[in-house]
Image (cartoon, rainbow, N blue to C red; front, side):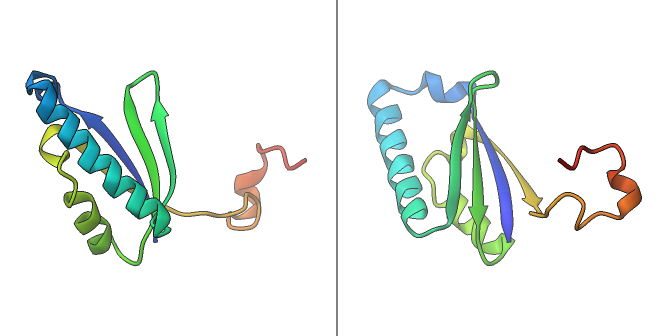
Amino acid sequence: MKFMVTIKTKDSFGELPEETRTKLHAGSFDLIDEHIKAGKIKGYYLNMSSEEVVSIWDVESDEELYKLIFDSPMVPYTHIQVSSILEYEIGKALPRWVCWGISMN
């Protein structure tokens, strides 16, 4: 199953001592690297306009996803939004009448 996970850091994170923030970031980045190497995270992006991190996950279930996310030491300092996503080719997965307004070049 594929999921898009959007994470935004809460303002309260900035109020923590710098040493604490550094340790939390390091622990979080270590987990991200681990999940990328394991093939769980397929893409990891920073949305500059909203200062959110968007990542694409490929896991066996939503339960697995939530377990992996909640292992992060940053969880108490973030807003997390999870959306399931479906990959398909335009024109093949949709009825033909839905695709009329889409360029199929």
